[in-house]
Figure 1: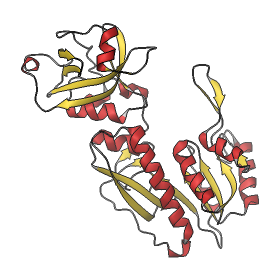
Figure 2: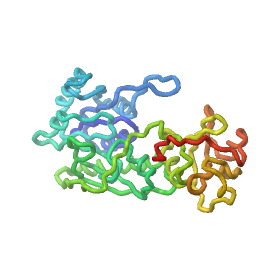
Figure 3: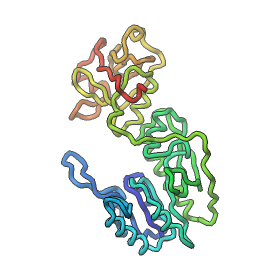
Length: 332
């Protein structure tokens, strides 16, 4: 097929690579403009742009696609490029811009197959920007990928293909991301191989949840909630934004933690956020329900370290307390 591809991060690059490998023609790539990144805040090309340039693919980076919006000229140029591409379909993967109606209409002509989206969840379980993170945070036991035809709603279009994937007990967002991305790439190649076989299925009206974008403000650990929920938060926010807690005036990142099935006797009288034991296997902290063992930590400006190594450079003992965080959104 002759395709337009719209995507930005690594999740999208994986799909683009497999679509190209399957022999499809990419007539145009749309991706987000270069953004400042890293300590030097230098402009950095998206993963999709880097792939497109390496393979000589036509590329456009509009700041917006609304023909009547702030970036109307860029949107008009993108519309012209899309028309010139003469594509059979458009594949959209974590693009980062909402597609206005004119884009959907442009791909709905005779002989065209519309706009297809690779969504990293079992719709309608998690619609929105962060389905992988929210699935882990919620304690879901499985996730998956849905290939859907896009409509004017947010992840509301009819489904073409769906595949399931278990969420393992130790999965972080970065680990699960890689498996979901690989599954999504395989599924879109399968869909594109035989569009005449597509059977569109409407999404269920029940079980809809919205996977809100991850915000830095969510990273702060609230010790008042139960240990299992905190452990899920730690895994869900690895690698971004990283769960954090303040101890002795320093903001400590917590990268790995496990809820404790057997709560130490010392924890029974401790208050939430209080350290109840310290050892090379981790720092055990009382929570609103149970206790949690912090096993990988990081001081500001330092490396991520296993608890045993972390403790060699940061003295922690039972009775110390992490600062309370009653304003954490997880408390509500």
